[in-house]
Image 1 (cartoon, rainbow, N blue to C red):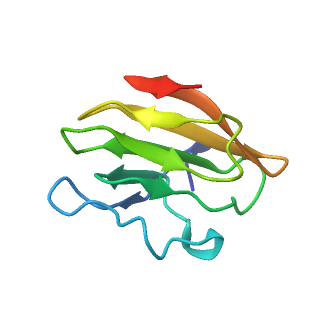
Image 2 (cartoon, rainbow, N blue to C red):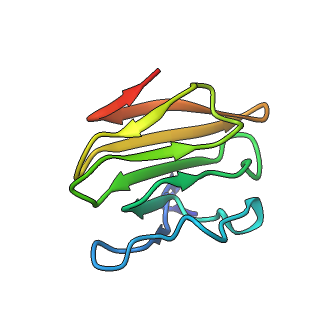
Image 3 (spheres, rainbow, N blue to C red):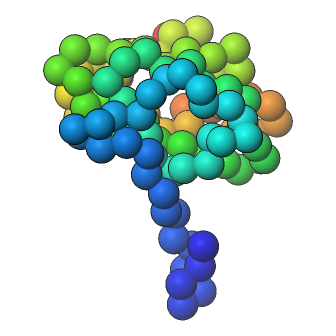
Length: 104
């Protein structure tokens, strides 16, 4: 979406009280920009080059973002308020930024 010529990223799935569920998410319905999660999340393939998704861990314990298309072998959000932003490019999810995450 653009507002006054500026790109505005919108869409959030879940809330602190009711986080996103990891089951049932497919490429077709991976349409939000932010997902609040409290359990391991299996990320499907992206929809198109440039798609960007941010995961925010709302659990007090660590959670993993898992997927066969990740550019890293392990991605763990270490605790509450830890985050990672991924971008889909050439059939791979690349880590763009993170906070309080263990990535290898």
